Length: 298
Length: 231
Image (cartoon, rainbow over the protein chains, first blue to last red):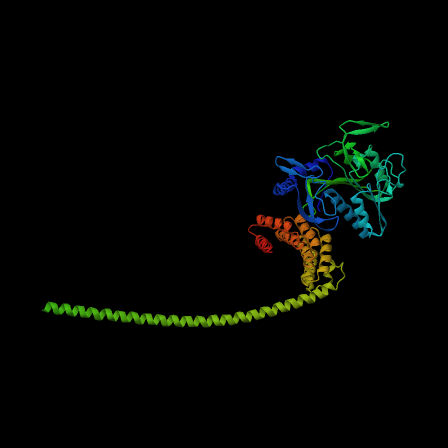
């Protein structure tokens, strides 16, 4: 997988206008045209989740749309492997796995990975994969509600779930090597505070792998809702995303734009970028696909 | 009366003259045929001699090939005895190539040649290890795309088709201008075939035929497609 790093809106715009973006899009459209009469089809490739050949499923689930020109899948949430991991999950696992393996090859030091999720297939994958790595510890958590002590284990739909509030993490300073957060930060009332906490608990040379709904055309983040003085205020129509531990779903507080990268720099991260990826082999289709990466120098 | 006599003598004389000419022509033609027969015989003999010479040359060629193979295997034995991280210090004299020749070669070329010979000896594991190290040490070498290709071939030869797929794809991604790109794309399709993903193999083989219509890979892609149809 070739990851292209973009540090600002302007550099991504160059890729969008003059890079491989159009070629990739044309390839994807040709693929869809070929299967226009079907509701789903499969694409052969290699899954970095199960490290095996896969026939990825591309269908109309999770918001695929029918248009006059044919149908468009939700590329980000589909291209599903038999191991049940989708496009974005496989890609971030790919990046985290490569990073941890590289670190383990060069050092025997204990390594802690913290994922801001626990009752998900991604976390299960992490636990299963890294159980054979003696020096790697995987910690996962969910936000279970107000007035619960961070770091404690609770029983809910699943037993022994660790509660953590991203705005007030229970971890010690500089105690975690890698943090992975998939589509959580948009559900946090004060993302800036959460970023400060993430920075605090990361060790020097620690890395953050983050996926959020990111609006590539927006220079600035739009606040959809905020809790002020204990009261929830909506500035835009409420939007909820699925939540594995709540049927109500999770409210989206912010639609992030490119200034989010500056927010990461403001809390102290030295190297911050949007990592763009695309691969026929690994089934990372659907331009543009990306995650955010940040590095703590000291 | 006189008039008729003269006329008769003239006609007789003409007949004698035509007959002589024909006989002369016949003789000339016989000589020509004889000469041609002689030439053909000489050429036959010449061809036979040339055939003997060709056979001798073939024998010499086989002998030379045998000697080359023996030298290569000696060189490989010496190369594989080196520690696995020994890609860079090739010029330490352990290569069987004369040092005055290797000294003129850049390190990447020497390393590439050495690993290629390891692969050729059938030591896929060592070649994979060394090609991977080569690509880390010399990512911008003019041999990097070749190293990437042979790395993929080593996996393919080991029947590790997942790793081969990844390595061929890396060649296409990292070295899009490589002369080996078309071959890599073909082998990607072959890998899918080996992984029994016939749909993907067929899709890619069809694309290869369209992308490289005048290249030999198009012919091989067609051949594979026909094979697949027959199965």
